[in-house]
Length: 453
Ligand code: NAD
Image (cartoon, rainbow, N blue to C red; front, side, top):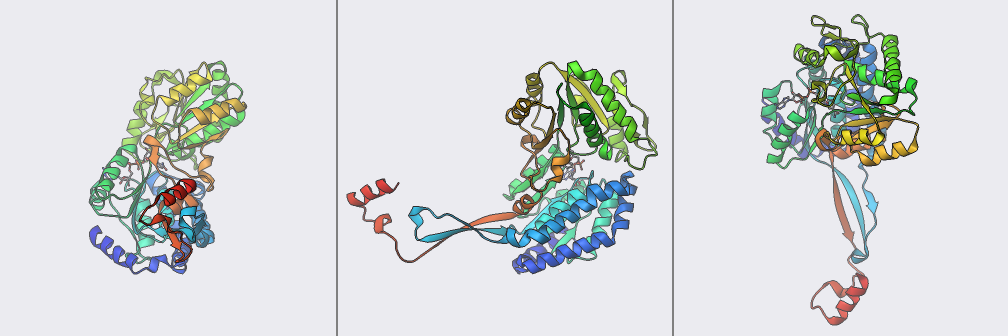
């Protein structure tokens, strides 16, 4: 069936008001949770076939993430959907004012390949919890994962409510011609622009979850053991194919050598060998080749081994890197970690600010002045002090980019808000209104109005 017809059916279904019922939303959220649990094996096998991701990683960074989101909405959708009373100003007395969360309607979610389940299903869950219909278009690059989601959902959900559209650029281009009430896109800034342009034709609101080069600053007061351990974990998780992974390190030049030694010891300890169950492959040959070209052999501090047949790239640290090197010209999105140095903390902040606003930024320090300057002087989507990546796992924080790294945010209640309109309603009493507002206007009325305003 063509996408246009499915969207027509979803429009009709949305207009039937069924998706607005809380009972209906909870029933399907429960159903989705059940399906994910029952089909765990299928989901593990599919992602393993795509890029060798282990069960442990798939459970902790994908499936449990989505189940946690479903549980959050099952517990909170009733209160999130309630109208919120706000104050009513003097000019509108006697009256009451409320904000009604309203589903936007028919939504489109476009996912990326690097966490194929989480990045497709989590926004989708937000769309359903907020009372919308949804067409989900996962990334075709993680093909088996896309097919697994399509099988589980399309065989168990009415397509007029929820449908997984399989396909690549050609299909997405067709889908983007249609008029949705909301588009939620996760992917690169380049494709984000294409999506934004297509949405603009219909004045469709968008959330764009994009990428960029996320820095990690390590100052001389940092706890090196903690910094190295956490950076190594966050960088080489999913073989560096994580949107919030530290893209590069900026370390105080005075402590560079000892910090490099700490990084090395954790890389060795965490065992990222080709046969290690916990180290994923590079997603495809195209990305493998792109990454290999970014490894400047003369600047390797450790690592650098690659195996094209296994699409394996060893965790690689580059040192003496400059801002002009190829590796600093694009988001790396792989297991290569360039290390640059700075002389002063302010210089480091200035250099970060010279780039596009990153999705994430990280600072390792013991000094509160540095923490304050880091937060106030550079703009970034979100981040951590003395950690990496983990801000994403706290659903009380909004998750999203700024500028080139995105528009809007989600997770927890922010995911509900991303798919809701805040309808503002003033409900006025039919009595007790002074005559001031109505003509004819007199000097006396003017004097009163001046006093009131
Ligand atoms: P991508 O932009 O290539 O693809 C994303 C989606 O867009 C896919 O579903 C794909 O089918 C579709 N697409 C690709 N080309 C298209 C076109 N010409 N027209 C219409 N649709 C098109 O991104 P990717 O390679 O899947 O993911 C990597 C990028 O995503 C990185 O920049 C990364 O930082 C970013 N990312 C961001 C987040 C986040 O939460 N902010 C999460 C993961 C990845």
